[in-house]
Image 1 (cartoon, rainbow over the protein chains, first blue to last red):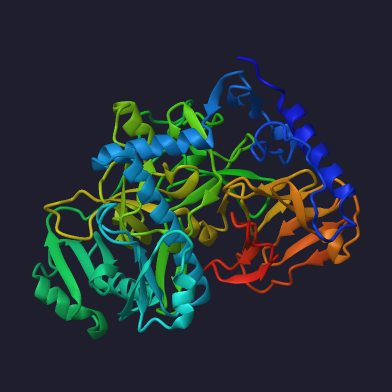
Image 2 (tube, chains in turn cyan, purple; image 1 turned 90 degrees about the vertical axis):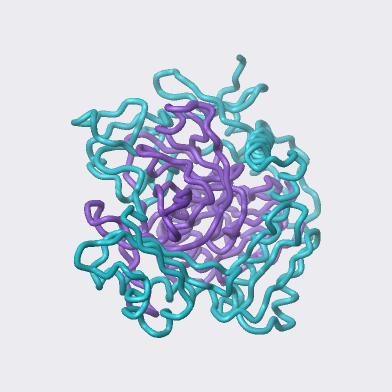
Length: 306
Length: 267
């Protein structure tokens, strides 16, 4: 494996851009000013905030990009093309579809997601949500709108490549549905139930649903529970009660499940790391995990060990 | 765990997420398998999460137990889950998935599609009849702003993040770049052609200039403590700036309401 030096690749990138703008800033027309080739894939290099922290580095080579740890171990960074194809293959396999059907589905979800963000940003008062049809061959992607869709909504919902159906005259916006759920959950919490989960279904006009684990001394009849709810949510809701928990987080207690976990108790259930994050200090690197994972000060983390 | 209030209802709803400072420099990467990583090129906005949309998952425990596990499923409903009291008893926002793919030890693991971050694993949560308890749940990463955090992705800056000289944003499709150049010019390229530059707005080029997405919502170019230019978008905590695939550079609120744009759309 021949790999290029990461810092070399970065230097090439910076030099490219400096040249381009130094010669181009006087030309507001934006005419093409530079055709300098990019070395490596643009954007995959990341400048550490503090070189002293920069043990793991990215190195680019003709056969891909690699993350190299301080101890010399390395993992391959999957390319954009590979990652999309793998997910499409996996998803098609799960669904029993062809890869081309999965690709079509992906294009639909990209289009309707783009439209949803546009409408939610400009018209949050009427945005409800979005949905795909049950299969790639059944119906267009859908945007749900509170009340009648006006011309502005129809213009915002237009997509250049993917037809999107507007399902309007819905009773609640997304924000209102969220408030209804919050009201439901807090009411049940105040009643004294300890384990329950709720959702709304935009395809059924925002109908609420809740599943509650029964608790001694509290009602186990859905109709009695219904009578305890505020009037604005009590009539349009499905209620289930069960002996089984409705909510069970996947883990608690102890540190991230990492390659070199340093936990005081190996029997503790562990967690998985999520994404690299920024806190309030842009110079401080962070890693995310679930909030219910505890004793995270016990972990010792090695870069990208899982 | 971070708790936030829903102002309209006066109710308390949390986010099942936390972040911890690490001793090593983090890169914008996530595990999609035990020994394979991907770059985070974008983050799925909350409102873009679509019913029956495809989404995939990684969890250390699951992949250890079964390397050939099923990785992908569909997004189902949006909802809220009450964590049992021995987990803190919080009510948290979640997105349900059609299948419950994760298991104990997977909490916090990434949900994604392609190179886009969707969420992190909560676990099992069933808002309907327990006779069919197949639904999983994840916490959307778009909610991380509630814990004063943001996922590192190459196409956006969240509050508190900075582009120093030599750093850049790159749109998800790779065709647009916003570069904070060493010469002090902030330049937006489309297909390597400059289409917007701070110098064109009359901002002086001073080496060492950086640009910051500030906590107050303003996107500001700074040099030695002197503000050189800004988008004048202060007053909205948690704003983020995103370089879109259409070539437009846009400042959004946390609800994705656009506040400022470079008007360099569309390529």
